[in-house]
Length: 192
Length: 189
Image (tube, rainbow over all chains, first blue to last red; front, side, top):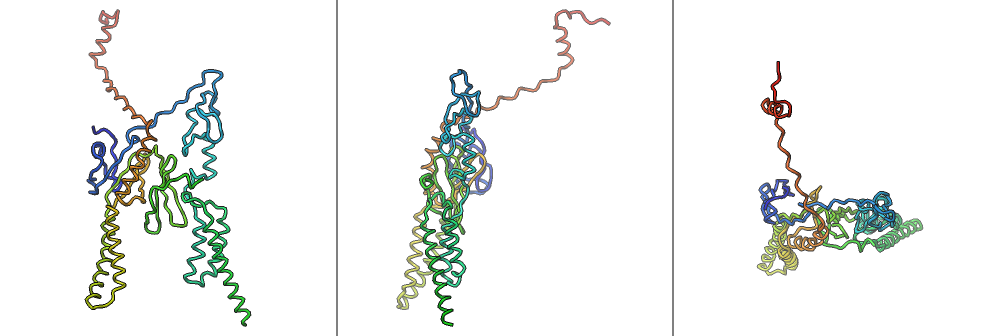
């Protein structure tokens, strides 16, 4: 049984025929001479069942919010609208209507966000790293304090959660550094 | 809560100037690349995953060379110090570090590169750099992906194209005309 699509070796793009991965889940690519292991899933040879909306037949049938001619088969997990099979889109573990998915995209929810700037890490680095060459703290400490204030309401890492411990630590260190500089300047000014 | 949305699958694997990790979401796999100050997220829906590829990588060999050189050099200095009846504290320390690194690298198993194949891309998973760990993570993901794709159906092959229609020849046209009712007489003139 060697029916299936040809795949490309992920390293050299050499074509691996179906015989390379259907009957054996390991082999050697003849393009780059690299051994590989292969784990396939149904999506390799199958597709999702085609979704077809059921027309509303009876007058008592609930109909889709977006398609009045289709019978409602689901409820949007976000807004509660009745949806037909076409409009009920599986999204981040829930069934949502297209309008809610669009709203999720514009609101930068965790399901769609592509990148995050970690202001807490930047603030902490600005506060601590310049201590290695301490005169740099004259510039870096106000920057660290500003970054801690700016990043206070910004979202943190998507995976490790949001914690303000780093921001508070950075702000404290920065304030101490600024206080140190002020003390030094006052001392030098009084000494004159 | 964002923190509960994802489950960590791997620890951070370090690359040059960045590190990456692999996380499992409710219906997708997420590759996180981070510089420490900026994170980027690549999501792969379980329903889109077609296959995982694990290819060989010389990672263990190169790290073996690195730790071997450290341990070998420190061992050489250690022997010299012992011969000269000195106290080799520094070389003992570096020899221990090198030897531990060498053994640890060996115990981690052979290196690999892991790729996930979807309909539109072949994405590398930089967090999976050791074969044993990669196999463990894939074994963890396999039932979830199979469950997500359980309603998939094998697409039926398209119908075979019908043979081309040949142009009618003179003989076939004549036979058709003759077979018509009321056309038994040959045309006059």
